Image: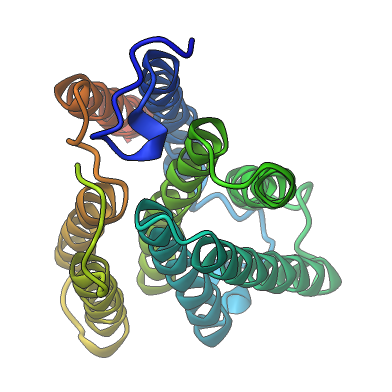
Length: 201
Length: 97
């Protein structure tokens, strides 16, 4: 694995193993696109089946949704800055932006959990209607991805503290960065087709 | 793909500002206008696709590295399958209704 180290490239691309891991993660993201595609398909078909229960207009608070959107969008930006600092070889800059990213992500998860609790108190649970079943499965899958991403990134941060910036820790950081940006990409579509579209429908 | 030496992440800042503009544009079109629902859906859907592309290119650097082309093809293919799944489901389930 230590063979063929190309020091002209950024740390995360320096070994063949690293390049293969990054390509492999892109292929995983392709599969994730399709996973979320199927959940969007279910929601698109069922999104008007209220079964006498609450409708999106009754439930959705655009202000809260905007706060969640801005939190996740900003965290995607700060994650980009973390990788940018990593490529300058600035370990402390990387850690600072990385930790800010995770705090913003945690803020997003907190807002989303609060939102779900609020819905359940209004009688909008997974069992209420097909609309709410598909809503909670789609949003829940995304929220679970963000939560697991926070746990994963925390472990990567610990490794950076222990081992510093090496081709291995740089590759791990770069890959979780891809994952994090991807979650914001999914959220753009949730924001658009679940919240905005259903509020005007 | 290159190591960074300059001190200011220009593309990231541009990507962030453009993402914010697109997000609020979608909000404005959806909430403030009284266009037909189908028109709104097409507009905000297009804005979402543009913003997703922005994230993929300006934040994730999808096309960099020796496998850049494979990465782009892979993501485009995944997106194509997702669109076929969603559009096909809507079409099949609403056919004849």
